[in-house]
Image 1 (tube, rainbow, N blue to C red):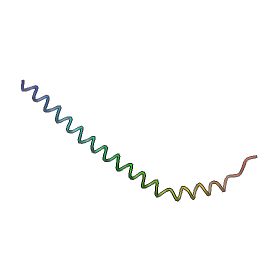
Image 2 (cartoon, rainbow, N blue to C red; image 1 turned 30 degrees about the vertical axis):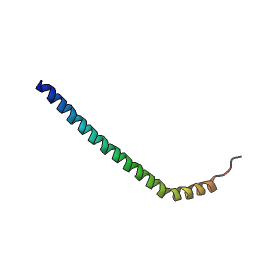
Image 3 (tube, one colour; image 1 turned 60 degrees about the vertical axis):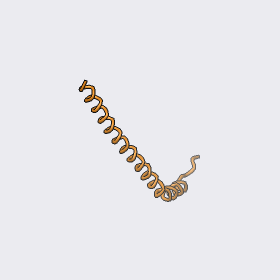
Length: 62
């Protein structure tokens, strides 16, 4: 009977560890999303300038 309690305790401890690590992964993913958004906003003006210059370099075919 005591082995059942030990198994339940180990399973619960394992689930707590998995839950803790899952929360850490979710927080890291949220922070990564914010960082990607900040980077996109910082690159937007350069991207617009680049697209404008590429448009003037293109030569029509024909």
